[in-house]
Image (cartoon, rainbow, N blue to C red; front, side, top):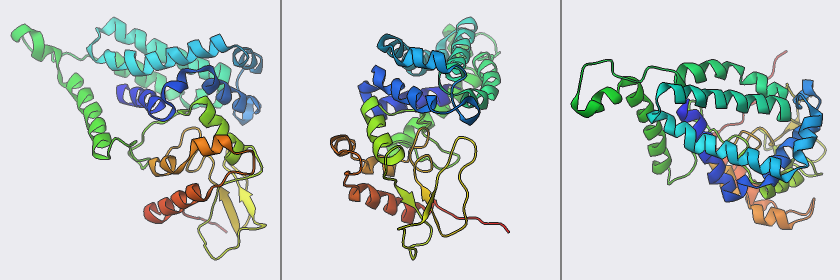
Length: 290
């Protein structure tokens, strides 16, 4: 629990920086999901979503509380007594209720199984169960607490060994970079890769001329379907709300994107970075039936 939640918080600071706490970060996310009905991934209450989206103070408070929860309270749970850890688990439950109500009902439902893991994990017996020890140190650092510390340290060591880059998005590893972009980063990505007239597309066959081919996009529930030859929209496949590959992130020039009007972004650097990632990681495969 601690590793999952804290990783998500620190990824927000790594990618979005201090700007993540500003109202624009959450406003971009909420208004993007506000465009869907509840069955397609929209919020349980579009009215409350719009109410929050239009008030900077609401957005700032929600962002600040999210960072404090993920980056401060959850790591401190390692040394908290049981009642306080259960309070942290309750805060996590309220976070997912907020996601359900204001952002996406489907995402809230997807994370429903996490509720059990929060209360089991944060409510675990972390003492050694042994006898007395010098100042109770050994009893405090029982097997469960040591295991939690070891997992977090192993993850931090992996980041350090990668030159302080995000962990690879390669199962079973993940950086847990969930909605980690700042407001300006969101606006640039959505303008040039998701909502405008341009798309970053992928193909498994370099012999195809991309001009005129159908572009298939991934959606919250399923995606568009067509017969080959087709192209695949990279948004939400290798870059997007919850999918961040460090090699692709490093190829994105957010400042150049922000300066460019819709359709005028010079994307050769981004395309080269994605092409290099595809060649080296071989992460795009095509499966067909029938």
